[in-house]
Every structure is written in structure tokens, then in C-alpha cells.
Amino acid sequence: MNEGTNNVQPVVWTTPEPQAPRKKIRHMIWAVVLIALALMFVGQLLGELGVYALAGAFDITDGPTLFLFMYLSFIGIDLVVLLYTLICERPILRSFGLRGPNGGRGNTWKLFGLGLLVGFGLNALCILAAYLHGDLDFSAGRFDPLYLLAALVCVCIQSGAEELLCRGYMIGALRERYNVWVGAAVNTLLFGALHLSNPGVTVFSVVNIVAFGLAMSVAMIKLESLWFCIAVHTAWNYSQSIFFGLPNSGVVSKGSFLHLEAATDSALYSTAFGVEGAITTTLVMLVFSLAVLLIARRKAVG
Image (cartoon, rainbow, N blue to C red; front, side, top):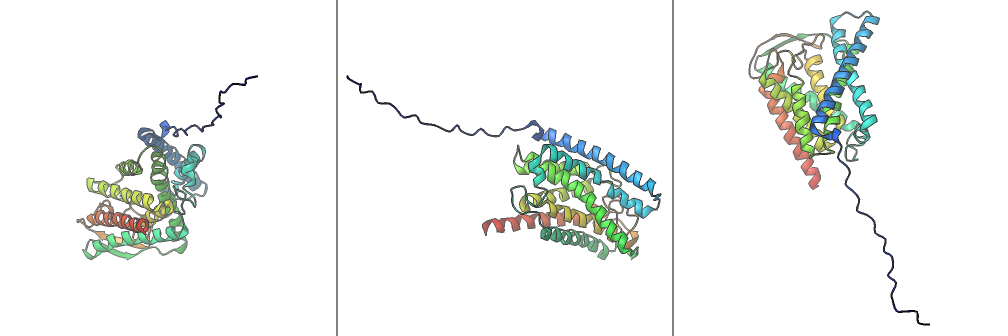
């Protein structure tokens, strides 16, 4: 019996090409901005209700303590951002911990400590320039170690909230859909806009706020360390408001290590907005950003 000569072709199994991850609507620019504003509004409302209730329960009425409670109220934003990322943005939440956005160990206590030194140094440099120019006159203020320590914690909560929202959530969400520098630009512009209602605000002070936000965005992208950004922001605000007793983005300190006796307006200092309304802040933020870019480039080459 003739069996035929047809050859049986072997079955070849092929693996289908992996589909590109679907880009989510919540990562579009308008959606990220709206979500950030909602998180800020809800968090601020909850935080303020909480600290007012706390102040009422303990009958706290003195100005310096209530001033710290103003910073403490930002804990509501911290908690709301963490809760939202836990539910909806797990990869972004992981970048808040020991691992950076790309999985590296960007968040370390070493970088946090370095950030504190950098933030204090940059702000002190701006204040020193105004002092040497004759714009500032200080006297001894409040030396209470417990108060100064509590103030550091409260300022860290406030600065941490702004960094979690802008450099943490916003950059993380926008990089899911766009180039990472789009996230830097969008969060920086929103960061500047959020300060438009601050007391004593001017066009130049908003430019400096934007420059600060851009510097923190550069640090977040190149160093991949949200902790570093939080530390720089904390030390900048703390040194300005709590140590030297100057206005922090227009908000006047109620209790500080040094007391501001007199101040005059100049290119190096704004009596309404502090050093954040001075040309020196613009310069140090630009130098800081360039230094971060240079350091990151050398590490990449090395």
C-alpha cells in the first residue's frame, strides 16, 4: 500500500508580541493637575480641622505654638497623598520608600542629611548677603531646645507634603505618559501658582518660587531621591523662618532662634516676602540646579 509522499510540517509555536501598557487617562496632564489640587484641598481641610481640634482640646492660644500648628496642619496632605498612591498608584508609592523611581537606592539617610546641610547652607547664603548689604538687623530670640526640635518636625511635615505632592506624586504620575521633563515643568508651574495668594507676593517672588520648584525637580529626576528634596525644602524653610526669624514665602515667623529687629527693601531682600523675593535666591537656585546636573552627568560617565 502506497502511503504517499506528503511531508508533515512541524507546528511552530510563536509567542505573541507583548502589548504596550495602556496609557491611563489619570496620567494625562489635566487629570494629574486636577487630582493634585483635589488631594491638596482635601488634605488641607482635614489637617486644619485636626490641628484646630487639637488646639481647642488643649486650650492652646499662644502665638508661637499656633504658628507651628500652621505647619503641622500639612500632615493632612501627607496622609491623603499616601492614601491615594496606596490605592491607585502603587509604583509611585514605592518610590517614596527606600527605592527610587527606577528601583535604585535613591532615598537614603545619607542623602537626607546632605539635603538638610544643602538647604540650610543655600538659605543662609542668601540671608548673609542681605545682612552684609545692611538690609537686616537681628537680636537674640527664643532659645528653647524643645520648641526648636518640635518646629523642625512640623516644618518637615509641611515641606514633605509639598514635595510628596509635587515632586513625588506629580512627577511620578506624569512620567507614566510623558517625558520626565514634562512632569518637571508641570509640577513646577503648579508649585508656583499655589503661592500666588501668599502675603506680600510679587512677580519676582513667584519667579523665585518657580526657580526653587525647578531646582527640586532637577534634584528629584537626577538624584532619584525624594528624601533629599524633602530635606532641602525642610532646611530652607526652617532656617529662614525658625532660625533667622524671617518671612517664609511671606508668612511671618511667630517664634524663632533669632529675632528680626529691622529690615529694608533692596535687590537682596524683600520686607514682605523675605529672601525669596531677592535676586540672590534666583542665583543660588540656578547654581544648585546646574551643580546637580553636573554631578549626575559625572556619575553617568563614571
